[in-house]
Length: 237
Image (cartoon, rainbow, N blue to C red; front, side, top):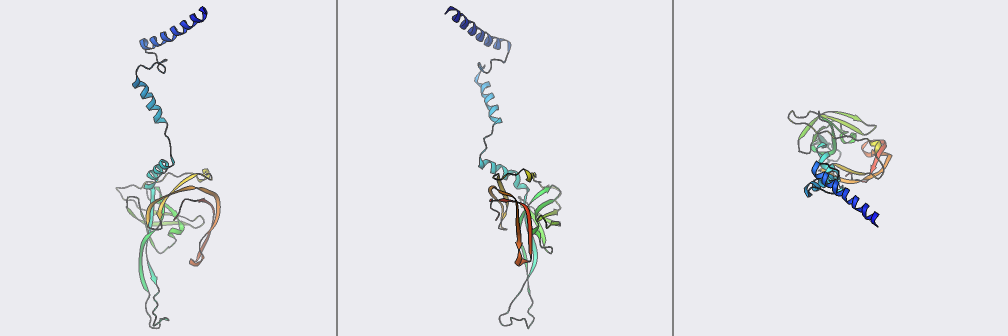
């Protein structure tokens, strides 16, 4: 009993001696167990909390939208379209009734900026009309006229070139690597819905990879075969 009691006294004396030495000589070994004050402990906890961020689906989507939206643009078209007029009293046009020309100017799709000097990527089918004039509208409603279009029908891609304003710079998006995608991965889509609602946000998952589809409208005169496309259930309306 005396031996155990003596060992206990020695251990207690060592701990107390270490704490006293820690305070007298500035050692930091026992700060964790014997903090000088609560403020230092609170500072350590705050620093630890800053390193840990709890992520929720809602906060992730908000962060993505705030980061990427400045790089997403609306593609608009301006063209003159001829419409056929049929006179019920002259259905065969014997009297030479002229066709009516109608000017169309509307939003037709979406794209994203890949270069601050004015390079935008969109789908080829969005800018398929080679006779029309195109423009892009940024998130802050700035308009830029498209001066050149490079079309890739095989991959249904197009690159638009605009001249940015001298006092403004376009914000390019940070590109990822599609080979890193996994089925079931969470995705967010941003774009112009129904050619009317700009900066629309939808969410979903990667539903499939490496899909092959036939796109286009045979009644409009074009049909394309697209391979290795990404399937998602995020609404693309």
